[in-house]
Length: 187
Image 1 (cartoon, helix red, strand yellow):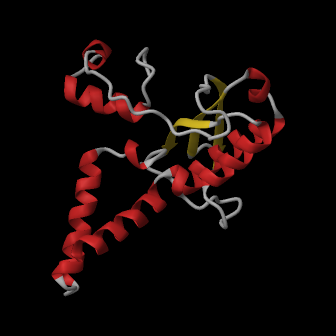
Image 2 (cartoon, rainbow, N blue to C red):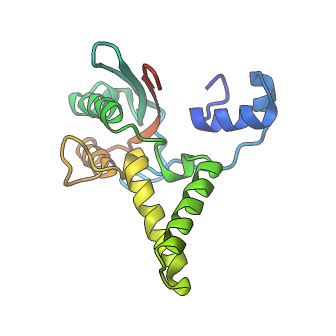
Image 3 (cartoon, rainbow, N blue to C red):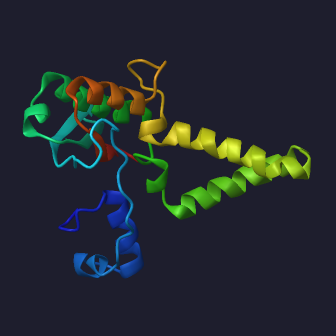
């Protein structure tokens, strides 16, 4: 957003730390967090793509999603366009918090870990197993709340990441889910 070329949740975190206005957020150095893409063509960047939208339930839920590929030729490809539409519908149905675990704000992760640890303590589990059990609970949290790790609504036998990889193999290009925004009346 807004000239920083950062994902929306990264921009939101920067604005929270810097105060109002885009100029303050631009002054915060960005971490070198790349976007994992396909292993088909390492080194080639996904700078083309499409922004897709989906409106559901008579305008009560709306989604915008950006998915990138390497060439405008693939961006216009029917299989790529189908992926964009499928993932927009998936976001509307599944309400992920973020694209990938790294995109979830640290305070949300800390809160979830604390809740999980309290649950393990209250369940009377042996103390030497707490960390391993909490790690398993956090893995499940990521699977349920990050887009790429969720079960794909169209085919629950695969994850969204696996669906993205299928299209990457079909097109022969890196495909990267860059960001999404989900709007729902009353949320």
